[in-house]
Length: 562
Image (cartoon, rainbow, N blue to C red; front, side, top):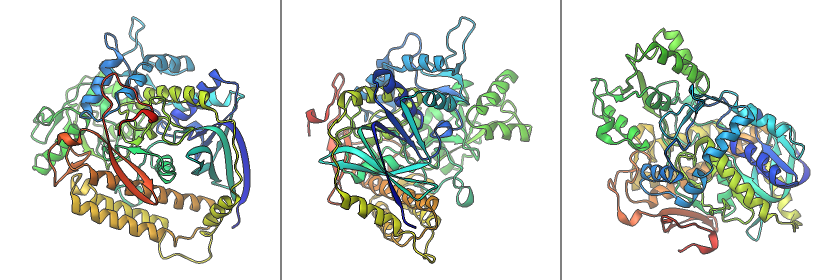
């Protein structure tokens, strides 16, 4: 198959039409009369992490609290390894973006006094099954915005460390897109599918984080030489067993405690940070006191009804399980388990190393949402806030001098893609190599079967195995454009795995139980109270430390203290 080349030029390019991407496009048009192009691998109506909906806005500043309170909470939860400047500038906008979402049509539950129904001091309850369609409708109604659905962006166009566009391929037609822009936002989300999941084989897509989030944006940045941060702070979700439904709705919504098979509350024993909740569950199972549960037995019938409705907005499989079993949560505790690890900057600090203005180390490339590092616990509203900051910066930047005449690069990339369309069968399929990758990461890089632990030797074996799979990828053959996308997605995941292993090797301590559980170094060390960052130089990953941004400091790339 031969690919046709199609060129597109826009003012502002948004790669990834999820929550942050759609919001960024909308907000950019409020500040500028320039054109926006959103390029999305799926369809913006139901793409990204909120494709199926959400039942709460988990980042909010409740009454009597301040943005600094949220910063302090996130810093404690991450054992200090956060960017305070990013957290504060994000937190200062949480109430604003929440109100704007409500104006857009999102149903936010309210008390009799007209105030939001809070779930703790930093959450508000919503009916959010339609949150993504609402955003998509607002985008589609804006004449300044063009949407290119079903196009997979896989490589940046960078000259002298300045981005001028990106390459993409159609998923349905043999088209190679060259997209040029004066500024670019990357909002493709984090990375799932790196590790063997709870449900392997045919059901491996049944996971917490969207299986179509392959780390594409991170991989493109790594390959282009962008600086990355804190990949070693993996995220492992504590979820309802089998359905992989969220547990926060139970823990915060009805105050359900974590209990073991003996009925003992164990959460206070291990700690209440996000990673410690997972760690406690793992320890109880290892010590033969599992299975573990969230204690819901005995809650009111009204609470039953509220939970059944709440899960319809985000994880209907859990609601169906309660209905089919005829065992509502008030009659039977909900069994819990940890998921496989993910790289997701909305929950932890992993992602692009960005300035306070959300610019990456590649000029003109801005990042928002799960792909942006340094700012954990941002969730939905935090991603929106970050998108606003990024577009304000992008609007000021706007590179008017886009010159590209490297036809040799275009021919090379076209040839690299077309060579996968070779007759015959390859020795391996994309699925074969993906499952092999997941097994290696699971066994040697701290997956579920290893109780999330690893050591120096196991990580070295993981790195070797990932390198071997990278070589095997070169022999893959495809029959159509969708299969070519699967190859590109596998290559993206392998890049993320390689960088992740390098970060895990570099942090010789255990700062976060389960998230980064180092068997050779089980304790925290003062020398690692820093950021572990990385860049690709000459095809090799270079790891280095960065000083923490202290309270009240802000960071721009040219000011950084090495």
